[in-house]
Amino acid sequence: MAEQKTTPEPVIHSINEPQGSTVMEPPPGWVAPPEGGGGEPGALALTGIEPDHFQLPAEASDGDVFTITATGTGFDQETVLLFDDEEMETTFVDAQHVTASIPVPDLAGEVDVEVQRGEELSDVIAFEFINPDVVREKSMPKKAPVRKPAKAKDAPRKQSKKAKR
Image (tube, rainbow, N blue to C red):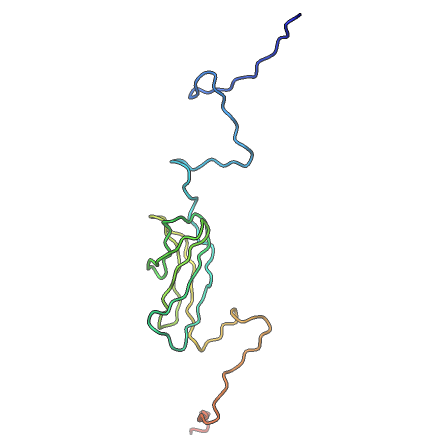
């Protein structure tokens, strides 16, 4: 019986691999981990906050808080939400979400929101506190009528500037 000759599979190796070892190709779509080890999150980015505004109550009590959710990329257990440059107690949800409880202030205004991971800071997103008497069109459902508060029958009526003269 004649012996069949088979061509051996080529052995792929590099200078760093011992002779005779095989280097396997990664599966399609595989992304190499960043240098310095795997498991590290990607670039830190803040892409949104929910809510992006808060209407102040007519009367706030000390200790009133509301929750804000930050959305982005590169979040980990060390990510901290900065609200008006102050570190807030932050809860890590996943690599794209963190939450924090924010104290309700006394005055309306705009503050900066960002996230920090170690020394790395994200871009800033503006957050707005609104006076209780201001109706914000963005927060109203579409086609919703804007109603003025009912006046008490016994309340004195305002006099016009002409009537005061």
